[in-house]
Image: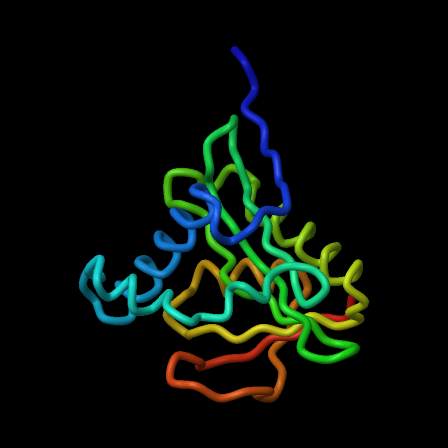
Length: 161
């Protein structure tokens, strides 16, 4: 039997695969927050002016994860200042979870942050995103004081790179 493999690559946020993944990410997190599926119009609105264009060097990086060639996930890092990068939009489609991709993606996002000059990674998330919180904890992230505020932020994590 052939072994399925992961492949990760930097990609512009406006490619077809990256756009579809960003839409799935927003639909997933918004739908969980609202406790109902997000509509296409709500997803369009949520992605409008979301700052994703900053996820390219020298201000950030966006990675697409592929599993056996299929677009399976994504994630980004955004430089906040000369020392810190923020982890953002980390997502694996549900069919690809449990196959080892999330930890590998997180490690490569940390490498991308280091390459941009960051020495510390920070992130914010919601308490209901339990899979994401478990991923961060498994990979050395610890709860930190809030470094930003917003309506969809419940908990903040950080890690020295």
